Image 1 (tube, one colour):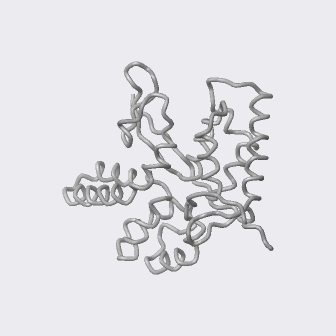
Image 2 (cartoon, rainbow, N blue to C red):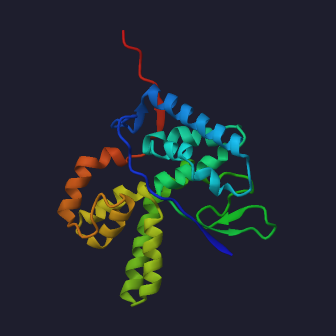
Image 3 (spheres, helix red, strand yellow):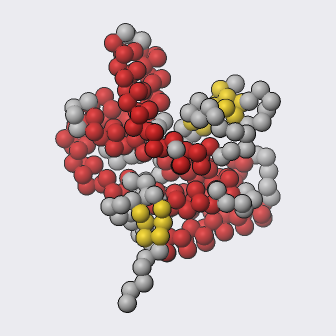
Amino acid sequence: MRVLLAALVVSFVGGVALAGPSGVVRDEELRTTFEERYGAWREWMAKYGYSSNSTKFFECDEFRNIVNMGLPVLPLIVEKIGGEEQGARWLGEAVRRITKVKFRAERREDGRGYVFEEFPGLKPGENVWLRWWKEGRRRTPQRFEKLCKEWKELRAQGKEEEAWEKYQRIRDLGIVALPCIMEKVEADEGWLIPALSYLTDNAVKPYAGPDECAAWWKQNRGNWTIPEEVTPEPERK
């Protein structure tokens, strides 16, 4: 049975950290805040017990507090997922909610996890979000161009249902696709504006014009850039 692994976008919440031009976050306070919120969430899980039903782990304020840190915290979340701490893998849900990325997967015949359409070579037990962070997100421009081409071909053939499926997949690339989308919007391909609106949580209205979108992007691009890493502020002499 095919399943869709979803993510809801959460806009950057100011006051925690900002990414510089290089995409590197320099703020030790960010790490401290994340560790405090992560610890509070772990305490909540320990208090209410671990369960195969993970949904309840994500509906508490402690988890939402992590998600509300927004894009700047992604490198720290991925760092934690890649560690050996038991239960840290559940933080993948935070990545989903922040990035608004969706994967398509089918359960393996032996029942050992899923086969992901985007990462067919993913081994059982290998974390899909670590693979996305290391490789998948960097292939977004190529996937985006392929999907756009397929969408246009399907529209030209009058296959509206199949074209909508391709459009959904464009949106499912998540906010990492925003630069690609904006490049086409600025080239007067307004059909992508609803996707832009969706990925920015309606910060850009679906009925906005290309010029309005371009102005918004120029002003806000830095707040929608995924940082590569987090480093502490250099000591001031």
